[in-house]
Image 1 (cartoon, rainbow, N blue to C red):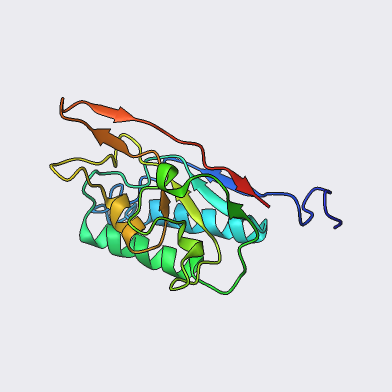
Image 2: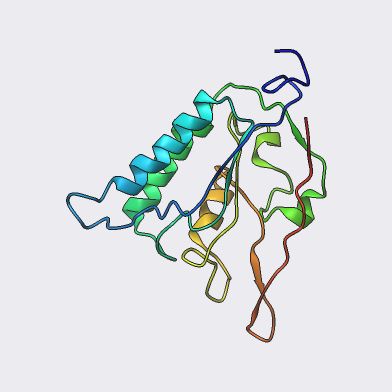
Length: 173
């Protein structure tokens, strides 16, 4: 299609998914894989519709501290579905340091050491929010490994009360 038409090269295509609750009922023999099957389906839809990126709206995990099994299965899916040779067709033009919570100062797809073909942007929810002295969550692990772009992290101030500031992530195609 021509640029400007629906699905054309200038159209930014975003798939929004929320409340994946990975790890839900992981000890239940019959339903343990349900949340992961749904997560896989989300990526199948992203591929089918040729989206530019996936936006996860919170509660990626069902528990604040997911089991190692849940974390490993999540990483396996992200690695298989997000890391490939498909070129990323957009740029993040906003201040990376203000909007993304990572140590590298840029979105994962701009890192020459990671071959991201389908970027994932995510925010935490009330099930997988950061906690503890270091204010960390399982999403921090995924971001540090380069699988997701984490934004909107709660900042625990000296008062011990969480404050959330979400800076806009401006993209240009």
